[in-house]
Length: 214
Ligand SMILES: Nc1ncnc2c1ncn2[C@@H]1O[C@H](COP(=O)(O)OS(=O)(=O)O)[C@@H](OP(=O)(O)O)[C@H]1O
Ligand SMILES: Nc1ncnc2c1ncn2[C@@H]1O[C@H](COP(=O)(O)OP(=O)(O)O)[C@@H](O)[C@H]1O
Image (cartoon, rainbow, N blue to C red; front, side, top):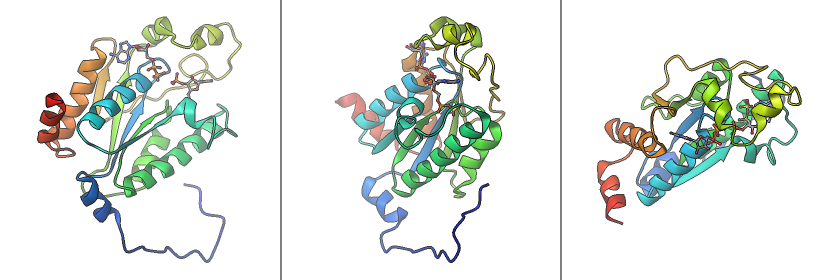
């Protein structure tokens, strides 16, 4: 992990902490980290899940590769070094959102296992506040979907270092949740995640009933 360049830094603790914020929000703060190839369904699933969680009364914030790369990370491209820095910064931002007591959804290719583990290990609560969701579809399916026409360009050689074509993707070995988006609908994918969250005590089952009633 990159060390801080500054010295003489002393952490300043406030009187309102994560526990207080979680109490106010009536749920825990945690990160749902979507990873997968371009076109696998990260953005689609994270948007649909956020909508469901919102209906359940949860406080959420979603970070998406394309969006963050126009602001915070606009100085970064797609070399291995830039992707590492991209994920390092997102990992830190996700940590802040957890500390804010929010359910934070991130949708980045995040192709390197080591970087995803780094993001996970930034906070180490006993109750595991970082869930990796492997959004999985075979490359040929992603390429057929090609929602932004990027695979076509990558095959034509006009996008270098394109994940799955000319840059690597390291699939998660032990993701908390594994979704095959070529075998399930968007709705089923969201149901699968919500069921996991309830079963493992991240959110209360009663919230799902509230959502159904509205
Ligand atoms: N070379 C290359 N490889 C992969 N993707 C590319 C590339 N160039 C541009 N794009 C577009 O950028 C989106 C991926 O950004 P990420 O920040 O998620 O990438 S990474 O995690 O740093 O690997 C990705 O978005 P998604 O399709 O939503 O994954 C693409 O729209
Ligand atoms: N089960 C599914 N889950 C998610 N997306 C799906 C699914 N089935 C088909 N799709 C489609 O696949 C495409 C995925 O695109 P996108 O969400 O932008 O992927 P990514 O963010 O991983 O690049 C969308 O057009 C979406 O409608």
